[in-house]
Image (cartoon, rainbow, N blue to C red):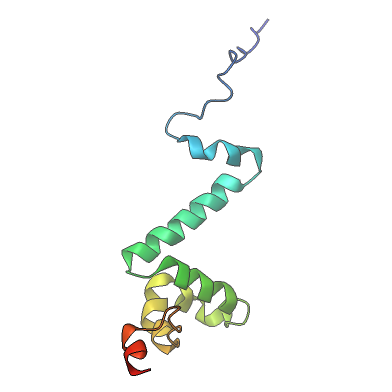
Length: 105
């Protein structure tokens, strides 16, 4: 007869597995959440490696992805996006006008 598996002691089930940090605890409750978090962290790391502002990149790509041709999907990667698409974007209006605008008024 095989011995039953050892049950975790009280509190052991609440601790993260070795090598993981505490922020992943809430994500384990949702199926697939750690994988989605890993994808997001990979995108953010790729943006930082290529000198791309992650917020600007994600805002543009999430809008563009539904209409962008699948044959040119590689243009949406951060390195290619910076070279191909970023130069075509119009600069956003500054939230606060420059100080020179007040001097002319």
